[in-house]
Image (cartoon, rainbow, N blue to C red; front, side, top):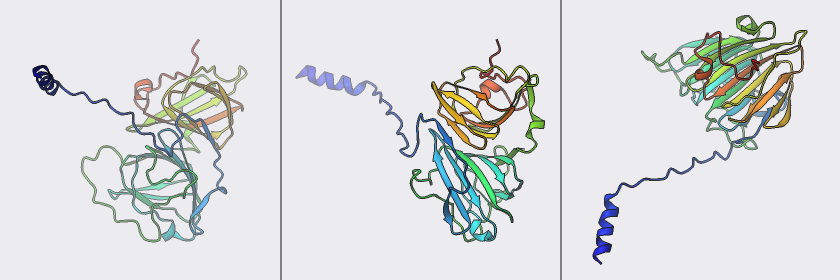
Length: 304
């Protein structure tokens, strides 16, 4: 009896260490799955009658969406002020004006690639021409249903909510227009003479890069197997053959590739020139250094 009493006192006095449960897997996502997405603007679902069409997909830690907005109904096409995780937006066609919750406005041209800070509320107008927009968001947008569910558009049919007054000391630009697809090649740094050109940009939890591969008389630059966080890559120009986790995947011009985190992969450009826009999470500051660094540690490059 006395032993039982003292054992109870001792157990109560000892610290209790809880075992962390494994994080729940979002049932909408496709963890570990390699995905090649067709950016077919005609295979989209109508969200706002005769005005907004979209489709969305999921990776392991992100969502991807393609929007087509038709001109002629500006009130219906204007989204309500909304926010979500860090977003990469690619203005594939058309243009307009984005406004953030601080009252700042950003004019967007066809080809502009923008980075929207996590949690920043934003809205906008899409102008007088057809818009096509590719959007990548991490973590996955909570409003999106599973891929076979209904698509989503954040409110329409009325003016966007009034922006909040500008706040002093906010942490960095809420929206950054990083580059334009039509002239970004002029900004790239030559890494392998005549064969490989590259530049990168960082967000809080993501990195964006542009890679240009050019075939010379000696072929393309020598590559090797690479491993990193999750990647979404848009083949802006040219097509590629990829070996991902030992399996072949073909990526045609205009398609989007999702490579799961920490999956070994390598690839080859099949044309005289390939241009890739890639988006990574988490960011790659530790490898590539700050923006403007001319000597990033490109681990996909075989330096032997």
